[in-house]
Amino acid sequence: MESSDAILTRLTKLTDTSLIVHWFTESCGLIKTVAKGARRPKSPFAGKLDLFFSAEVHWAEARRGELHSLREVSPQSCRERIRRDYPTTLLAAYFCRLLETAVEHQHPEPELYDLLRRGLDHINASGASENALFHFESELARLLGLGNEKRRGAPALREALGGLPNQREQVLASFDNPQKIHFPDHKSEV
Image (tube, rainbow, N blue to C red):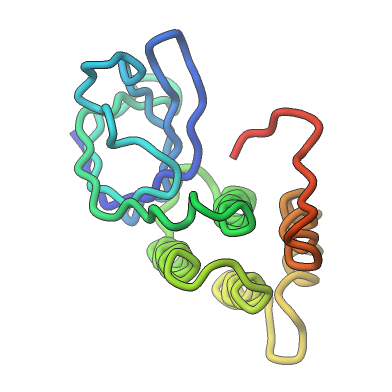
């Protein structure tokens, strides 16, 4: 059994009763777990799995493949304020998706874990802002060895990663006109 502090970055329905839960862990990097029975009303995971939660997680390694079995979750921070404001939710989702684009699965990146934790804590306390977006991108570029003081993080990341997640444009649009936010036409994963 493995364990680590982790941040829940994505949830996907697997079956009528189970979920695939994506975590950015401090000790193992990005991992995917299956939470069997998590959608049942009396599940031991009830109320413990939501986007941007920080938790101590325990999982059993998969014998084959990368889908591990989630055994236990102990939430540490729920970051409730992120889900109250759509631009803040968009920015948090962008942070998670950008990290998923930048790192390999199951490769420990404790500095990037700390960056995500600090970024989510900041926007949970202060809300979404262009400064938070630009700072996160600049710090990520710096930690990946791509950025410098004269160049913003986004161009360096765009060049190195072959583009940036689509949420970035939605986040920037929400800063320009928070009253007129356009929801995506299609159902997208967070």
